[in-house]
Length: 154
Ligand code: HEC
Image 1: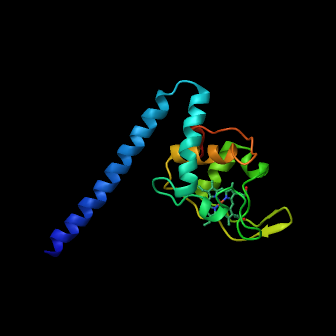
Image 2 (image 1 turned 45 degrees about the horizontal axis):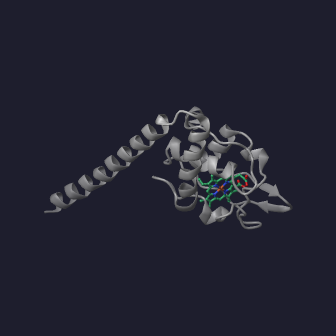
Image 3 (image 1 turned 30 degrees about the vertical axis):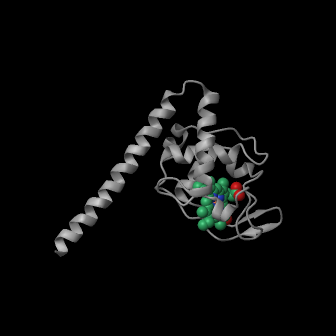
C-alpha cells in the first residue's frame, strides 16, 4: 500500500516534469519559428511580462519584490528602473537571475543589504523573456536579450 502511494506520487511528479519539458520545447519551437528580430523581441517581452508578474516554469518571478512597475521598495528591494550598471549588459543581468545577488547596493541614496535569491530553475527562454521585459519597460531602453545570451552565462 505504502509502496503504491509512493509510486503514484513519483509517477505524478515525473508527469509534471514531463509536461514542463513539453511546454518548454513548444515555447522554444515557437521562438525559433520567428524569423525577424522585432518579432522575437515582441514574443519575449510578452512572455516576460507573465514571468515577471507570476513566475515562469520553475521560478517565483520578480514583481513580489521589485513591484509590478519595477519601482522596488526603498531600502528593502531595489528599483529596476535606470540601473544601467546591472542591467546594461545581457550577461550581467542574466547572471543576477541565475546566481542571485548578495552585495550591498546603494541606489538613489538608499542602501540594499538583503540578498536576492537565485532562480537557476528558470529556463533560458524564461530568463531571456523576463529580462527583455524589464529592459524595455518603465522608461528602460537597454534592449532585449536572446536565450542564447542566457545560455552563454550558464
Ligand atoms: C525575494 C525577493 C526578490 C525577487 C523574487 C527578485 N529579486 Fe531582484 N533583487 C532583490 C534584492 C533584495 C536585490 C538586492 C541584492 C543585493 O543588494 O545584493 C535585488 C537586485 C536585483 C537586481 C540588481 C539591482 C538593480 O536594482 O538593478 C536586478 C537586475 C534584479 N534584482 C532583477 C530581478 C529579476 C529579473 C527578478 C525575477 C526573475 C528578481 N530580481 C527577483 C530581491 C528580489
